[in-house]
Structures are given as C-alpha cells and as structure tokens.
Length: 216
Image 1: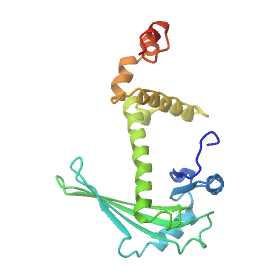
Image 2: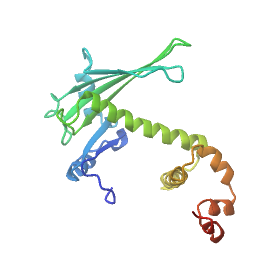
Image 3: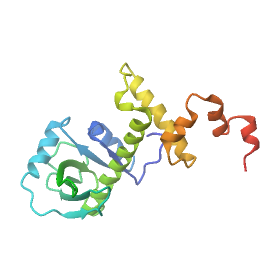
Image 4: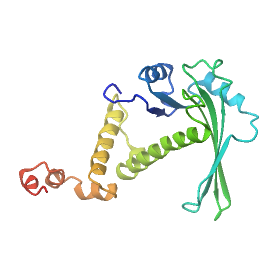
C-alpha cells in the first residue's frame, strides 16, 4: 500500500485483515476503512452481534431486480453507540447486513448475516452508502475468485508450502489483470488459446519484434 495513493479512499477488507494495526495505518494515510468482522476477532464479533441481536426495522433496505432467477434483498442496520465501547481504533459506526436470496423456481431461501465496522461517521456514509461499499467489496472478491477457480481450478490447488500459495495466487491474478487490460472478456478461453505456447503469448503482448511492427 505504500506505493498506492489512498488518501480520501475507502479501503475494504475481509475478516482476515480486520486488524487494529491496519486500521491505524489506513486512517494515518488519510483514508477510511470498512472491515468485515468474524470470529477470528471474537470479542469484537460478539460485541457487535449481541448489539444487533434484537434489531428492529432496518435503516435501509434494497431489493435487486431478479437476476439469474434469484431475488436478493439486503437490509442494513447501523449504530454509533458502540464507538467508545469497541476495542478497535477509529470506529465511526458498526453495522449489520442481512442478505436474503429467494429462488422462485425452487422456493429455496438462503439467508446470511454480516457484521462489520467502518471509520466513516454517519455524516460521511449513511446506511445506503455503507451497503454500497460492502457490496462493492464482495462483487470484486467473488468475481476474482470465480475466474481463478474456473480458469486455474484453484480450489483444488495442492501448493501448500511456505509462500507458495500466496505467490501462485499473485501470479495468476497478475495474468488475469494483464488479459483484462487488453479488453479480454472470456479469460478462460484466452488462457486456453495461449496455454503452453510461448510464441503466441509473446506475440499477443507485443513482446517480439514482429508483433511490435504491427502496432497502430
């Protein structure tokens, strides 16, 4: 993050990175954070969960248009009453998001509840804005994971030693980002086209003399 200009931005993270030092660092860089809270931070998690245990009407509710045969409804509750109580730096609000997905074809209902904290105070981010930021994080996360799993079968990856898993993930993410920068829509198909063929890869990315001659 030292190489990235984050001033005025909102940094989102899953529960693994919900850490006090990171929160201090982000606010120190004149940015804001929005973190998901899970049981890896048990005290923080149960304090927020218990507060919202008997929640009433949501502060904001959003229902998406039916997509892929599914209807998603998201409700959010926020509070500033925990700001001084929670042992976490720079808390501006705590929040609870409940997602309900209904499949009219099967009548199946799936429900999930998420908890979190943000350094944004209500005058900077109302419930609708917090929900928007939270959704934005997961849309990126889910999109990246789907491509990695579909293209590289990453969920069955057997690399487990040392920094191997993280480095492999970075290389694959870099490759996907490089293809996206070229306007590729079907990442899986393009990877298959270039798979184990060094010359087409070099030509595609304009890394050979012949390919550079055709630049417009």
